[in-house]
Length: 374
Image (tube, rainbow, N blue to C red; front, side):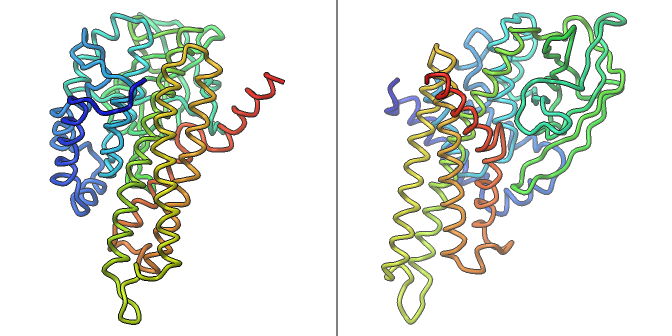
């Protein structure tokens, strides 16, 4: 897999860098974070440069780009701390549908998702689950003209902003995925902000009736589609976090050059130079591991694919903690105040560890894989 930017990737990243500077500055991000509804203007601006259709197959109106292009894109979006539902909708949900082999649902959703008119979110966590992808309490049964869903889902990333939800449930003892309208009768959404400026929702399903065509996949096909969606999400999250680290290192370096103590810039003090150098090393490790995750998505062997994705997630989470915490330290007490964006980057990098499987989960995955080899 070639990770050198080609001409199209350079044009895309240049466009995104300009878009981030114009539309995702500090105050603009803060203003949108206070809104409960999706800002359609900002979302459409992302769609106009191709973000929402990046991995949508060409036959459904997208660009069908590679995981390498997804890394390049998310690096820029991470630099801008984009909180719009790019990863939950344009990455996770898109990849899930594209790998579902359900041509009817693909034709219904993917063209609108590519154009920015349709936003989806995946609802799969429930009860006391933290990392498991297997539904337990949410049940689906045949009834009426199709199926009836009952249960609840927690921590649904962008669940309150999505027009439709992909909901996992148990159907005839197997995992099943359903496409459910966000305003369906019997479905309620409790939307709330997260610590890093994004939004989640708690979803309850009380006798929600859906048509037969709402069944995306069942059994092994559903599990494979869910794995694909989560895998692409892990890749995007790693690249997003790496981009956030890159920008945070720049902000910190500029602060050390301008802030003075004892009539000298802080950047003149060797101990602080060492801290900044360590931050830069961690940033580069994170970027490299994002490309490792991209390589993982290209693996045909499921175990090797999981090994690369989990390794990347753990390494990027560790790098993010170091870069975020060190940046706050180097800024001093002002680093955690609401007036500076340093705290925003710190929170995003901290929260990224817990999304799509925390470090403990992925370390357990790696341990299980290596034990199988022994």
